[in-house]
Image (cartoon, rainbow, N blue to C red; front, top):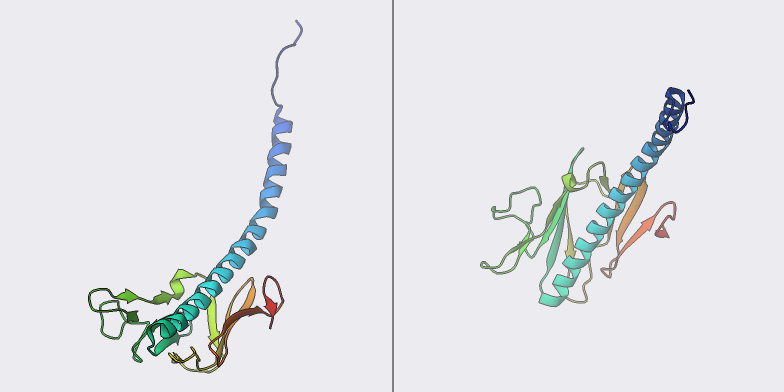
Length: 179
């Protein structure tokens, strides 16, 4: 009898195919990890920069001083802003020192925690556990400062100028202006 018309894979062909797929997956996983780290770092830096810009815009639009508070501990950090100088991003939303704006009937919470951005660390230029930037209602000027966010993918800096301008820069120049 002739063996015609049968199609399929031999055991050897199947093992070779599985070995190739396994090696391709082995190459793709580290690249995917770097991609995720880069995305987390960019996301955290953009969110931080946008919150600073919103705080400045709120000071200009409502003609009130705005205080941007930042708390950095060894393994966690948070930030928030409010019209109150005593804004503390570590407190719960219902507490009096929570970072919020608006009237009693329409209050809005302005706070982000490090748990929103896993594996991203935040460093400050001045050593202080809790610090505050002040945005003035006149021309949006601010107390100048700079911050560094970093993880395994690299480091990005957020710089606030005395004029209140917020910008992002990179030490290696990938995607942002060089610091």
